[in-house]
Length: 284
Length: 286
Image 1 (cartoon, one colour):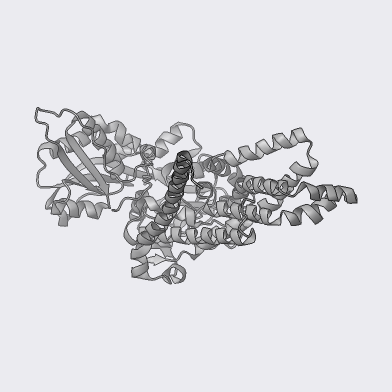
Image 2 (cartoon, one colour; image 1 turned 60 degrees about the vertical axis):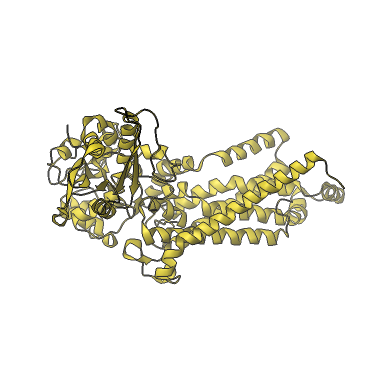
């Protein structure tokens, strides 16, 4: 039962590292609460949803247009990226020749590694002007959705890939023995078995999409209003913080902390959802 | 305190290098000091977030030339600059305007000019816009370029994010309220404004004159428009002909003395012109 000294050092340093990581999250949440406290006290929680507009310098703090912005951009991106990502993972596993699959996986990893500001720059200089040809100015909800789709596609694709790899070999042999076609195997065996892993991937992608700031800031237009069409300008909660933090003071600044708090709450909800869906086996 | 974690000044790209800066407290450079005594002199400068980034750079250079002096630059707005200088909480206050008549108890020293100009895409046939036309465009009362003498295309209005100094100057000059502005795109700093306009042939925006002049000279597809017949150039800002400008000041209570006077003299000298231009402002002397 006695651990060697080395083991003990290892165990305690791991515990220490875990404690630090956990404490950082807790401290950030505490910090957000402290930062947002002044405006919550002065204006109350309701003003973030009921005020007539977002004009923080005039004590109007309605965040709902930005909340809609974040939600719409995210839903759009996830619903575009998910089918593509799952199909690409299936292609890798069941249809691509081994050599091609290897190259393809590297490509997806590369896609995941490109910094978001690069996507943003491309979106601003290439994508937005193209959308602008259909409906000016081009910096719009649609541009945000397209950019985010490309950005979260690798996240979902890699997790889907891992989920599909985890389908037990014996299932495959069973399918082969029963003479199932490739498509039947995928549809009836692989996808249902890998379902929780696939959902986790989608949720991780959602988390990344909702938290993305720089690229969205560059392509979305950032006007504060609830969009009426996909060609309208939107501002997300993240972009709101990045745009206004530098010069915000007092309650204006505190209201940006509230944006941060709302984002954190959304991410917290998503993580819990992932936990429930995968029944505690997020990475399993 | 009032400073955010990420200090991206609206006109600043130098500051971006200091992104990790959690507070604006200037690092100390220790060493021998001018003269022979080794005591540390600490100078506190607070005020306008427009002036702070450039003052921070000036302070760094001053410190490296005068070891033994430590300068602490903090933001909080022009009103804080006035209040702190008045009540002695700061040795020097920074304001992004001139002193008002009610502030005659303070002494003001100009350090730089800040001018902004309207920009359109290079391919836009518009040569000039009157102040009235600009107001109408930004209020959404004019939404097609043909109404102001351009081609038949919908105008994309580019505005600045709330709290930016260029926005403040723009609103004040044109007598606008931010809530009246019908913006299609809202941007953060000057470079983003230039890129947005350069990427959209039917857009109109405004950026600091220094930025517009530099980018236009580098072949970026923007066209700075004259204001009330005066061309948008740093030269016109400097000699006071350009209407869309303001003077950035530092203020002290009573006549500055000793190291405070040295800092103000330094900030007004030609030695810091590159720093002022680096933040897209115009030095007060040619």
